[in-house]
Image (tube, rainbow, N blue to C red; front, side, top):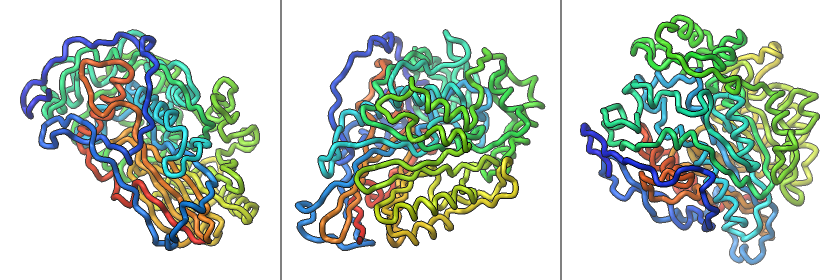
Amino acid sequence: AAAAPGTAAPSVPSPRTPAASATPTRTVPARTTLDSVAAPRDSAAAFRRLGDGPGWRRVVRETLAAPRPGRAQRRTVLSSFVQLTDLHLVDVQHPVRTEYLRSQQLSGWRPQEALTVPGAVALIEQINALKEGPATGAPLSFAVTTGDNTDNNSRAELDWFLTVMSGGRISPNTGDLQRYEGVQNSDERLFWHPEDSRRDTDKRLGYPRIDGFLDAAIRSVNSPGLRIPWYSTVGNHDGLASGAMADPSGFLAEFAVGAKKLYGIPDAEAKQLLKLLSKGGDPNGAKLIDLLRRSKRAMRSITADPRRAPFGPREYLTAHLDPARAGAGPAGHGYTAANLDNDTLYYTFPMGENVTGISLDTTDRGGHYTGSLNTAQLNWLKRKLAEHRDGYVVIFSHHNSWTMTNTHPDPAHPGEARHHGDEVLALLKRNRNVLAWVNGHSHRNSILPHGSFWEISTASHIDFPQLARVIEITDNGDGTLSLFTTLIESAAPHRTDFEDLSQTGLAALYRELSHNAPGSTTAPAGKSSDRNTELLLSR
């Protein structure tokens, strides 16, 4: 039971399941949000417990073409795949994290962050259970991530991401191998301390006491890996400190592997820094670096760990190209040796007969969390669209059109222009072979018509409602195409049990904590027309 606001949280004395290695293989139903969606059992409770809610219906969208009778009997499937986006696998003990900004913005730190790895594994389990598209019954051909696979641009997080996707055992822990060292046992009451009964920010909002939570959060997790091929797209959190700072000085890279961590700063300083970062005003990290240099006396000692070092584009590519990470394929997950040679993170790949995927790199290495394309990549995109003018094309990127506003120059190419989302939209509209632009970044579902194609943006898997999306493309045999979009949750049960700290129990708790996170709303789910849809196109 949850505590009422202002009262001590109930204690849950002992977890039932000791280790991830004891987690049995379980049968996962092929469930989508058409069937059921996690929903609060008592929306008026201080801490809202989840259960099975009604599914979301499919909405037919006719803006770009009218549906014609009998198309279900005529249609041919061109491609069927799954989009995962904004997994944000988090090393919650990382020294460069700015959790202390929560004093000015409660949503700046999430109580569920320690459980990103078991949550992501449960999503992999659900995709494996589906096997086929819910609209057409065609086998799922592949999966694709659309960036922010990691959170702190940390080598440890990159290792966790690749293992989650391709299969293996993950220990979501850095620093001290035996104990958690982070804000949740720091005695800073700004954060949820799950293992004591004293009041903190989140317990005042009804968060429970759960003994054993922190040990469970750093326990090893087993991932079956995707049973279908998967492709990778890069996001700003995969290339920049805190997803926004380029740090040419190298200070943050050195600080990341060190033995000090800052847990709290004065409210006035937090307010000033948050205002700056929220506007993208510190692309080189100078203000953050100045804060860290001035705050040495306020820092606490932690266990240093070289695995927390940031990775650059070359390390990102090399890790993907490692044969040990091949999983169900393909080798490199879209990236090739040519990307290494050319220092690029964009490529094309086959999606089905006469359908080509184009994966873009919208992160600006000059800093800032918004995106753009450099001139070289924009020209490459123009060439690829021309090469495939006789077939169909789907664009994949991390940023969506309205968050590609970044004009910071790339330090490696200071004289090269950066190109906004409006320019990319104009290019795609001139190429009628483009069917869709699939992306993430904004952590909410949104589907927009753009004259001759659809822009499909999907919510994250760290913020509630924690979704991925199945997309099926069909030729209706009548001069129209349909793009079916169906959202899926992870395989974790909707109902949670605070005493169940097994791998599956933690994945369920991950969802419930995210639903109750301060600042969490229903907005990321979008409207019904942004969720399960049939999107018509004329061809």
